[in-house]
Each structure stands twice: as C-alpha cells, then as structure tokens.
Image (tube, rainbow over the protein chains, first blue to last red):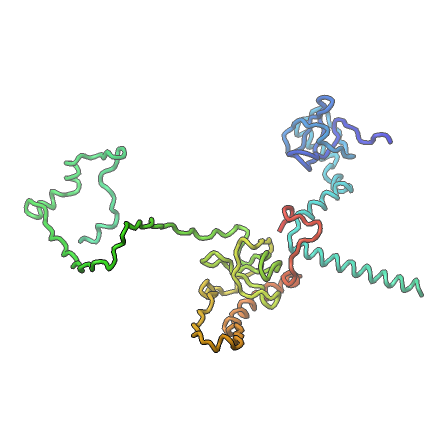
Length: 134
Length: 233
C-alpha cells in the first residue's frame, strides 16, 4: 500500500478544519515539517497545518509561491473546478450541501418522490418475479 | 387670540450656548415689537381681563376617614410595545404549529392582529384548521409562501374572536339535580361563511403550486436523524 497522493507544490487540497472549512486550496510552498503555505483564488495566502488539509488527486503545474494571477491561470488551465465537481468526492460534497439546504417543503417533495420511485421499483420487481416463477 | 400664534413658534433669540441667548433683553424687546404693541395701546401694555374662573362645585366631605394614613400606590403609566413580528413571517407564509390541538399542522399565515397574535387558517378544507389566533412563540416559520393577495382580511380582529358573554343563569335547586343541559357551542353560520370566503381564494393559489395541497394536509414531525438546529425551514 504505497502512498498515491503526495504533498507537493501544486497539490490541491480540501480544508477539513477551521475557518476555511470546505474550501479547495493549492499548496504553494512547504514551510516546515508540519505546515504549508496555501493559496486559493479568493483567499489571502496563508499558512496551514497539514493536519487541516485533506489531499485530493488533483495537481496543477505552478512555480513555488506563484503570483495570484499565475495561480488563477494555472487553475483555469488544469480545469480544477470541473475536475473536482465531476469526481466522486466532489459530487458527494455537493449532494451533502444540497441536502442541508433543503426547505421543509423540499423535504416533503423528496419524500413523495422516494415513495413513488420505491413503488415503481417494486412493480418491476414483482413483474420479474412473476416471470421467473412462471 | 391671533390664530397664527401656534404655527412656526420658533424663538427669535438663537442660543449661543445652552442658557445664553444671542440678543440682550433690550434687543429682544425691539425684535418682538413690544414697542409697537405699546404704541398701538397708548404707551402701556394692553390689559386683558382674566378668564372667568369655572364655578367650583362644593366638594362633599368624605364618608369615611381611615384611622391610619393609607399610602397611595404609585401610578404606573407603562405601556406595552406592540409585539414585534419575526422577519421570517410575512403574509402568506406557511407556518408549523408547535402546540395545542393542531400540533404539527402546516398552516397559512394571514395577518398579525393588534393583540400581537397571528391570524392563521388551514385552510379548513385542506387540513381542518379554522380561522384561528396563534401565538408567534409557538410557531416555526417555513420559507414557503402562498399568494395571499386576493384575500380580504379587514373584518378580522381580536373582537371577532371574543368569547360570547354567557347569559347569567339563576341558580335553582331543581336544576342542580337535573342533568345539566349540554349546550353544544354551535358555530354561527356567518363565521362558517367567513371561513369559506377566505379559503376559496387561498385554495386557488394553493392548487396552483404542485404538491402544496398534500404538503399542507400532512403533519410535521421529527423523524430519526433530523436535527432541528441543523434543519433549514
């Protein structure tokens, strides 16, 4: 079981603790054994402990501590946003956020839809069972 | 006197500092035109007869003097401020009732009455909640709104919901032993008609939205895994 995701300059990570919880950031420098300099397009560049970061599969090509403009261009080129949102991890987070923001009425409609879907599935299953039994 | 005295009663003597006017007494005498008033009246200020004093009705001596001095309680002039309506509650909001007979029912908010209570209706046909008053504290406001523009709510106020004054019954011994006549309080027809007119408009706007009618006829309850402090209503 070798490691697959390494801490390196350009590694995209998800912040999993603290004020910036849930934000996608890029590691732009390593400060010491425990801390990284971290940057994102809409954030002031700052240090963060590795323990607060969850590494992702995405890596972009940047020089050490790039200017903000360079960083943004590199992120556009690597299409970080779309890659993230189409990855299964990213999709899960989007669904979690959607569920948390559901209205009481939305939850009700969701319940109706689940019941309907369950009903249809059971109908099909019954049909298949009948065919099998016959 | 002159009717213009009340309008625009500003001082002709601006304050330099609180307590110190800009102009001296003699300057103010001149500014106010007191010299002109004197001149008009022949060198003296005009004299006005005092208003006739209202005839004093002779006060009757009190029937009873208490032995010790009775302390009068201090007069309390405090007034209640009108109840503040939560920003999330606007006319047409769907509310969830939290207590009482209709606990859990989802209900449409109509308006806030002068007593501070909220006027609310099921609508009756949808979930059995009639035109009713409800306290703001026992209500969760959802973000679902119903269009309430066509409804006329002018005739509903706190007086409408007052209990009917019970006629005094003379106590007779015979009546105690008789089975008490069960007076079922029947709702008067005009109140039923009020309910129908209000609901007719509402039901039209409700049926315009998909699933809203079934939503209103269902009760709200907390299920397993629902955390109220994390739920968005």
